[in-house]
Length: 314
Image (cartoon, rainbow, N blue to C red):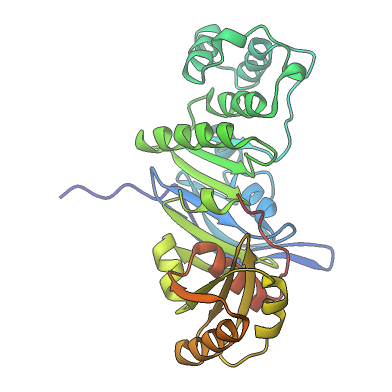
């Protein structure tokens, strides 16, 4: 019988404070080989601090675990050399070309056959035609591609990506995610924080975090079903006013306007149906039960935790 591969990330009880601010509380995560794991939460929820603890840039105050089989407390140097970490902000040299930036990164890693590795990275990420272009002249999508190429240069088995698609156009975001799934199919694990619901749904598993505490994790289907929510959609005009009217009605836990539709969600399905159908009928609008979506669940969890900052809609 063949043994299952060890998890790429397996940590328990991680805590981190800065002064009197407890930023991460008892974090436990397990990411399998070849898995794309989405990390979601509002700004200031502890996502970046968590990622930095996993890649060896920060030492947890307490807790234990491993990253790529290395102890996160005792072997941070080995972790740093074997993961690819992509920060929130573009952090390369604007006055160097794409090739020169990649060559510099290869020197930092003391890579053998450095030039060959750079050329291979340029080809794999579709950068060969722009290799001599200065990094400072690149659009957001091309900067993102350069950053991913740099992350992959030393052939890591795990990528830690901190909001990699923020500020990138939809086409570049789609191409980026296709590349992530290609890498995952090769057995590379990916932990990615994101603010986009369409990206969350492309992950194999998800974790929601708020105020440094992990709220829920699992597949998108598991996360949605685990909250036992019912959702109705009301379409028509004056939805903002209707939302306010419904907020405190029996069975209504939350109301959120999505363009031309109002999503009304709650745990008490029977009470929710009565409140929604009554309000919609009074306003002369149609109300329809719909499947609860991942964003409905996210807003529900954030409201329950006290975090009110919304994710950006795609």
